[in-house]
Length: 316
Image 1 (tube, helix red, strand yellow):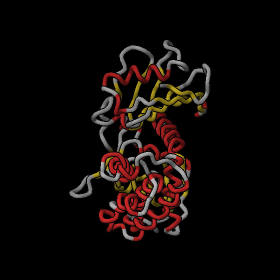
Image 2 (cartoon, one colour; image 1 turned 180 degrees about the horizontal axis):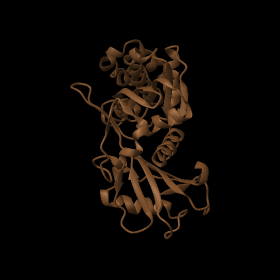
Image 3 (cartoon, helix red, strand yellow; image 1 turned 120 degrees about the vertical axis):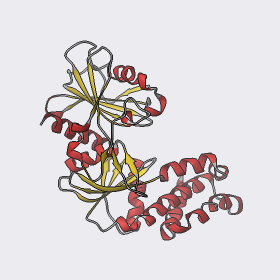
Image 4 (cartoon, one colour; image 1 turned 60 degrees about the horizontal axis):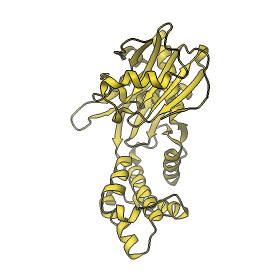
């Protein structure tokens, strides 16, 4: 269940940075000067845990690198551990939101016994009739982006299960919107009639060809997305499209339609895409088709930089 990026027992950490997502948990042991002493990952994300399980899971993943006894050890946590269904709800900051205040708004989560003192950072919400939206975890990545790229001002696209589009000015989130592209892809591929066309799909050459074709179709006419989805099924039946091509086409169609529908966000200063390697490449290709060359930032690096910045803010 656990995977270590750096094997063996390490020097004692001064504190622990934690990114607790829906599907995965990632921890970093932080030493003097902000140096990473170890990092570990687990598949025990929020979706698999009851609230009372969090202290045990956190202690277990840290056990190979953190002694069970000693002086209190702070754990600064971002992500879905702070959701209503998580460890302990961390109330949202309202957008427009100053990300420099994240640490000040953190909540202290109960950790029976042991050394750990856990604090969970808040998410950010957007209120107003028709404008309601929320994020958890992305706000820490945005703080990290503003640390890694000082004076950034513009649009941040954060692809994932629920893609976030954010207007960011320095460390201030002005507004944002969520697009459920990733979840739509998973649902349509696995639970709709399109599954028959995509079953057994891999990442062969046909996938890239299908993606390119879908990207063009979705980007050119995002308003026609519902009418184009069934072409995945029809293409398999009538044109002998392979599962690789069909899955690639579906992915390209959804991402292309998202980018096309969000064109009004472009042209507002800097442009960055923050996320995992595979997704940022796909979104980068979609934006290149629009004539854009976004700054690409690794999502894990942004999360760690954000947690380091939040810790620094907390310490003054």
